[in-house]
Length: 306
Image (cartoon, rainbow, N blue to C red):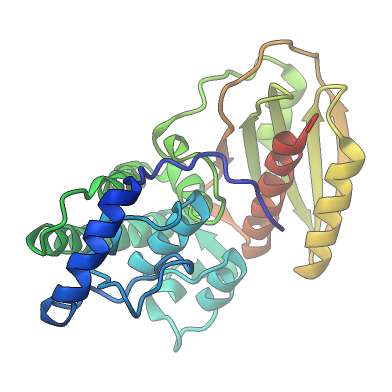
């Protein structure tokens, strides 16, 4: 499912700067050390541009989805949440990931330790890349520093287990980058919502641009998943059902959705955000379903009134 990029923050140099850099690169290419094998935007001609220098002049904007692929590679993560879940059960293929899963339940504590270590390793690799890039004569590493700040936020946040599931899913949802270091501040006042959170294995609190604050609580009964979705009256319920059921079917997960009406609030948020609450152990399918619900809500929110 495709998402519109929310925030293209990479600064592009002007045409004269590009021309000068390209000319210089053509003369220097054979003498430059090779950078680490990290994914580059497809529109860049890698045969003509040394990878260690290409970040100084973007021929195409590096949107959030491209940045996430770069982060996944740096952190040695599979390129989809489904593959992440599958590799946890493949002890031979990925022993470190396999440690997270015990008796078919994901340990948030073990997941936190895994992401913390991988982000630390990624920070070390990225610092080396930045150093090599500067030594090669490049003058602008601002986009690499942006990515470094994301890694620092991930490492800092995963020191607190309650943030771990959010940080993992952010690596698979191309949201606005500031979400990596922004907490949901909205409190739950409704008693029915509080009860739903208390009784669920996993709940997701949302801040949306068009629908104010929403809540999705997920429960599992005999391999069937029940979603209680607390939304305002203008939320596009049928569209949510369509997206979730289609993606759940692809993942071979059975889901039943029940909507709960909540009071309409006119205030608008300026950014999409979410927070995950769990009891410390969740099933792999619950993680996949949480990913589906988050994608569905933010897709509906992004496309609303377009």
